[in-house]
Image (cartoon, rainbow, N blue to C red):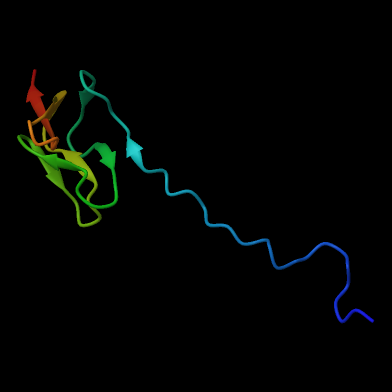
Length: 84
């Protein structure tokens, strides 16, 4: 005889909620001071001018301006905000 029921298993119901990571404001868009530009895990994108990184690697704007994404020859991505 079977020791377990042959009905659907209740052990499969675990899944984590999505973390909503990624780019929130794209290049050319206007950013207000303190607005989130990118939510990320680790430093996939690096801060440059008028931008700061929070302790969870989220990149925020420091000033009111236009967002600029720039890649170097070593495939690093830098984000800055240009005042308008």
